[in-house]
Image (tube, rainbow, N blue to C red):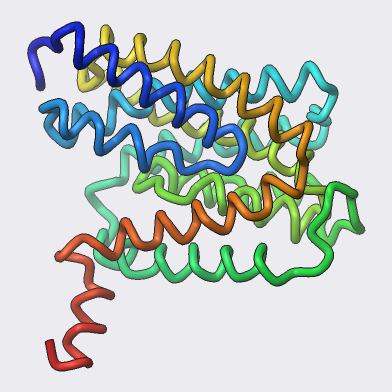
Length: 266
């Protein structure tokens, strides 16, 4: 674990967290900025992931508060899902060493590309609610804990997976789906953060500074999401999902990348 961070680096990480918090509140994917920044600052992978969970938790809590103030969160429907996601994320973090990481590395980019294609092409994506395909209680017992568990194990794209569920299964409009996604994100972030904190992996001074930045950025991002709605959220979701897929596939050890390059004779 890194011993200390100089003031200039800390200020830079704070600035990155502000921008990431803004993006995260709208479409997720803030970790694409903050995690590489922590690694470049000299953090080892475990402390970088743990500290990133602290700033991510702060941003998602901030966005949840902002959306709740605007009465965009329907608590009876989403609270059971958030609690299930939080509990499942703790279990996922505990099971992280028992699951085949290679399968996740290969599968998640494909899922993210699929989500990007859906939001890019689906005609019914708007700010208006549509008919739900399942009840909120069913959502809380199925997709919410599944994504929460995944967030504890791995994490990239969890917000996109919540989002696709709220839109396609519960029929929420894009802005309300974003609001409910942030609450579930906050729960699963806090669940895995609790485990990292117990393990002593979080660099608290840096995480708290970045958390303040993420909180500020998320307030701005949520305001933009409410003001511009689907006009902003929909294209940004497509860009973020594709960016996360590219980021995962850029890892030379990704089995899907190796399989494709092997098939092409490289």
